[in-house]
Length: 175
Image 1 (cartoon, rainbow, N blue to C red):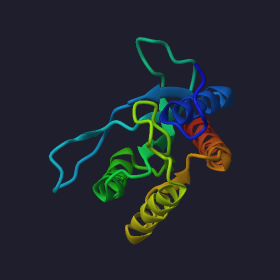
Image 2 (image 1 turned 180 degrees about the horizontal axis):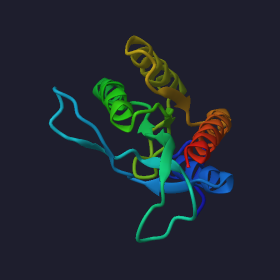
Image 3 (image 1 turned 180 degrees about the vertical axis):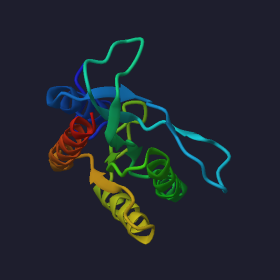
């Protein structure tokens, strides 16, 4: 079964594929710890994380690594509270990890289990615009991406590759 570009499944698959092709360790639901006075949870698990590693990752452990990109795949009509949560949590995660990495939020507009989901292009565009507005009001902590296209994925690869190179170069110097 193939999935259209705008479905959660295809977006997730494309993110994983691009990460693997670029040489990253790709981990769904990778636990990121954080501390925030207004949030009881202390772990955030993005849908997908790309890690740059020093050495090959094995199933039982991950070698020294740096998170270079995370992805939160959301529906175009996901509640505003989800966007606010991402905007609140990721700065706390960056503080815990002592470094910034990009967060991409591609919005899917097709759901196999909901046949009419995404049938209204105007609603999709309004949802995309709403998420972009919430992100902007909260400092653009994450980049809202239109799941119907893949230009954002090329940007993610470029940004993550540069971050990985910088980390590896710095890590080698400190050895």
